[in-house]
Amino acid sequence: MKNDRSIGAPVSRRSFLRASATAGLLLPSAGGMTLLLSGCGGDDNKVNADGSISGSYMTASGMTLSFVETMVAKERGFFSEYGLNLDIKGGQGTATAIQAVLGGSADLTRANGINAIIAVANEQAPFISIASVRQKSQFEVVSLPNKPIRNPAELAGRTCGIVSTGGATENLLDVMLINAGVNPKSVKRPVTGVGTAAYELARKGQVDAWICVNTDRATIQKDVGEVVFFSTDDFAPMPSDSYNTSSKMVESGSDMPVKFLAGVLKAIDYASKEENWDQVINDLRKYNPEADAAQARAELPLLVESWLAAGPDKALEMNDQTWLTGQESLIKAKLVKSAAPIDKLVNRTYLERARNL
Image (cartoon, rainbow, N blue to C red; front, side):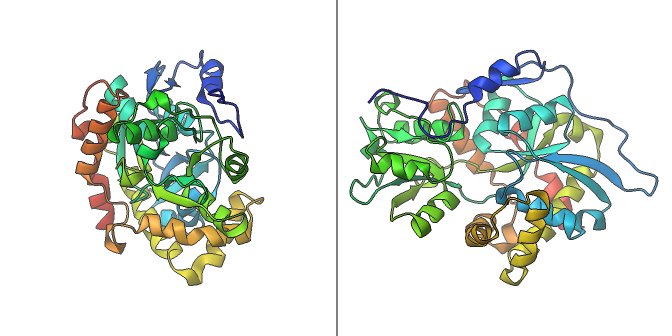
């Protein structure tokens, strides 16, 4: 089988690269990012007559359950309680979300830790992470029970599907393989996208394993068939999804990120309680009417688990060592050229202040 990157539902960033070549903002490429900034940061005048602050947040990809905590924070009034009038926008991938913050069309966004590190370390992007949404990786390596893959070393010479070319899953695959002493070039990596399609590709022998989010794996186990899986954290610990803003926001002294995180903390506490899940799903469906309520309810426990994996009192906590260790792994995998100082990667003061509101 050739190294065919067109299997399944491709989410390649290369087509975005071509489409965005004249945008003058952030152009990502596999294993790195090229920055062409026409501006950075949005309108400085965001204080309303009543003293509230207006701002905007862009999800990394659409209006899915993964981003429901911000929807809950807005719909349950947690943002407005802290004087924040937030506009929530659906992004079209991590690259566009980062681009929006750097270009000024969004104040806050969310990005995988790998993407954030690459942008800052390789291109000195004025982009900083202010809280970790997930306290554990959402990505898992999945295989079928009759041909189980239980660790990265067993992928040598085989085929592992990825969500997108040049994205977080491909970078994670390279890091896991290098950590296991496997030549990454020995592993073919077709794009298998998101959802359950990869299971059928594995059943037909077109992939030996694939990387997907844990909620997709749970859906496959429930509705399609049994699988074997392990977390990428077991072999390539990395900071997971984080909230991010621009360095211009930090320098402005605005309280917007503090108010945002305070609202999210309340939303996570609310959405973590099973008795509130019907309302959480209703909030999701306000932004995404096509969302399947039954599927969302089945996936919510995994999402809550990822929020609270470090403990209920550690929601949104950032671990400096995880960021530094993750960066070192990316350097070893030659995805990052040289290390960025920790204070260029993360700013924990907003979260500390949000906890005290």
